[in-house]
Image (cartoon, rainbow, N blue to C red):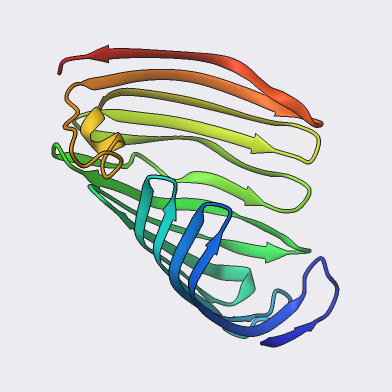
Length: 212
């Protein structure tokens, strides 16, 4: 339930929602709660608080997903926390909303998992979100035992993304998928994908598997 005021490009939203035992087209969700009090045009404090529990997609499981946003629209801060079998992601971003668009930067991103995986954001990266164009500049996660770099851009007409990774442990990437199977080794990945306009995705992909 809630209210929506103002133009559709930048509405003032006051709403709350909750649900449980949701199943749709092979996706299940044990429960969720969400509270939104967001005004993109004023300097008053806005707040978004959303929580998901036990999200299942085929054999993939996400135990919990928590998202919060607070502060005035011109200087908001957001946090995302995701827990999955053998994997934990924590991210923070900051920036401002103007004319229905967000412009800011990814401040931190940490990825931890099995096999002592400990990756963190090397430096902040510019981030933009809007119905007309979204993107994130190249960012890198560094640490042990591997590293990962990525960037991406999207418009209604075209999208593209580039991903490179080295020495990522297979046990982390496959955690929770097949509990009775233990995966060993590490992979290196180099991928470039692009598409848009209703056309199938195209690109290049290279994957190398090693024992350590």
